[in-house]
Image (cartoon, rainbow, N blue to C red; front, top):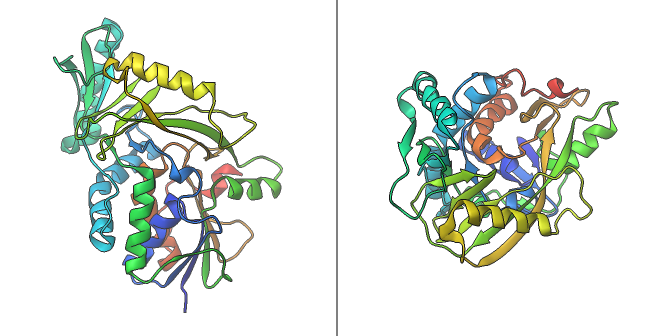
Length: 343
């Protein structure tokens, strides 16, 4: 008997399926488009924390998830034999002036309090290396909590781990048991049609992949652009945030602007050729936090949606709390993440 039916094979659906399988559940995954076909099939994969201040449940949840990630992805690789490209190599950010540096230095203390000995946030002199962002102040913010992985490889790693446990992604099948809907933008549209106020919307993002080998080096966030040195010897840059768009999967001049900004921020990328361009629509819940929990007025059905830009970073912890509620009926979902918070 199938205990859990999961509709949607993006990062939320696959991660929750994996957590349920690890706990002995029988799972079926259904997605007519295949695994990672939507926004989970992107290029960037930045697992970066919020600023360590003004602490709230969302930041605390994210911290727990980022600290779980290394074990999560190692177990996935051990089960299926495919590496998600996970690496916790930290992050560099430029500083514009003395006041910005003073603010960053004050955050060193809050990071010590909030992150404790799990990671550091500190101001460092710009090192004499090519792999760094241009910093007017000649100093950089460096944190050791940030990590990255390759989204497509991560989805493939989860698919392989699940297949090794007898679970494949099916194009269609009847629901059996408890049903989880992790259907991204399409799921938000379904919810919006049933409520007078929108529970979320799609936000288009565009990203690019450059041929430059910086594997093992920190990721960079500069000029609003994530610059990610993947372990396969490429660098991903992104992304845009477009509330209005005509074609959800086309790239255009807005991505060209992101590429220009990345090259200006990190001059060593000036001549790195673009080898891939990507666009997709990411699900953003109205609360701006992931939307998790029971589907109102639909007994036996649950929702995991609204990952937007932080879905991969939140996935290990979301998989844990959703498997708790799906398998044991235990609700460990924090306030602000619940489905009803978006009603």
